[in-house]
Amino acid sequence: ARRNPDQPEFLQAVTEVMESLWPFISANPHYADHALLERLVEPERLIQFRVCWHDDKGQVHVNRGYRIQHSMAIGPYKGGLRFHPSVTPSVLKFLAFEQTFKNALTGLPMGGGKGGSDFDPKGKSQAEVMRFCQAFASELFRHVGPDTDVPAGDIGVGGREVGFIAGMYKKLTNTAACTFTGKGLTFGGSLMRPEATGYGTVYFAQEMLGTRGKELAGKRVSISGSGNVAQYAVEKALHLGAKVVTVSDSAGTVYDPEGFTPEKLAQLMEIKNERYGRASEYAALVGAQFLEGQRPWHIPVDIALPCATQNELDEADARTLVKNGVLCVAEGANMPSTNEAAKVFEEAGVLYAPGKASNAGGVATSGLEMSQNAIRLSWTAEEVDQRLHGIMHGIHAACLEHGRRADGSISYIQGANIAGFVKVADAMLGQGVI
Ligand code: NDP
Image (cartoon, rainbow, N blue to C red; front, side, top):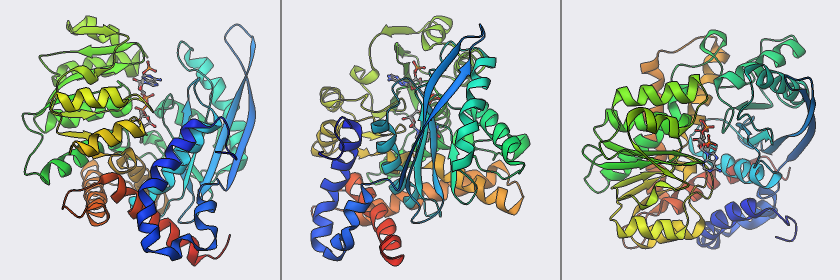
């Protein structure tokens, strides 16, 4: 805390990991040698830069750009770019720290990083977004590369933005190196990358339910957010026979007691992805309720999938979900539950998965995109989906291996943190004190 004043999100993420690791490290003290833990909570490199761009009226704006290169211990830095006014070094450091463990859990050779800008894409024209992305790339390009750092998308950065950034990178470096993932299919992108985080989260929830002999079919599900992760979580939950009754955005929650259908989902995707519109427009279109300023968590469900942003589900929300009989909470977003909320779920015996385990399908598929780029081949959607499914199964198995409590129940927090930590820590120890 002394070293990182004014970084509450970073301290929150570190506290969660360190608290759950502590008993394991006490039992395996060599993991405390060589200042390993002190090294792990310090990013290898923190880059901040100025981004200047012109709006459509010719006015100049100045934003801040960042790239946090947290750990290269097991592969090139890897993690998304976020464009949102709430972006600060604290938010990006928490995300890069979490990413390091998450990437280790996938079993693929990827280190951890994160980046972005306080630029707000809302209400900007296509030309403004392009100019911003090009300005951002004109500085970022010197810090990344296929064997150094491979960024992807995150909040406010989808396929369109990754394409603009990758295009500028190509121009500046005169290489076709595939330094970004989440690219368009015509220039090296992977099938299934847009779907991967949402699908992976639902695959993970299915594995969790399986430990209690249950399945998704027939269950009521609430989902927050209405962006990339939320949309494909809705789609996969529908495929598996669940009833999805909510989505949301920062203005409020869409509550549809009848549940989503594939037709309604197509309408939501059209509004969000083609017109960059709002969840309230979707509610009006399909005749669902729009609960202004509210989050979805007071609506009774069997399964909750928070897929919007950090700290969107607090202790009171968790208590409400538990009171209403929630069975399983799998995080599609990064750190959507506060540490207090996570404790409420674990103490109540709810199946609860932290994002670093349940949302790892996105980065895993980015890893598969890197492999396809390296061998200059494209796999079919079925092939990628099958590998994604296998990776989520593997992460779940790792959580069971390291997260089993004395009474036989499972702490996915403990399981994910220990399994991820052991991989990163062994790699660091093997490479000496660097
Ligand atoms: P998008 O930008 O596509 O969607 C974000 C959604 O979250 C929007 O509905 C947005 O609403 C909502 N949201 C954002 N900020 C807030 C806020 N402060 N309060 C309430 N709602 C908010 O992003 P993604 O779907 O890609 O990302 C969602 C989450 O998933 C993030 O936590 C991200 O880190 C995580 N994640 C994403 C991965 C990916 O592959 N994309 C991989 C792993 C994790 P609004 O439009 O009103 O801002």
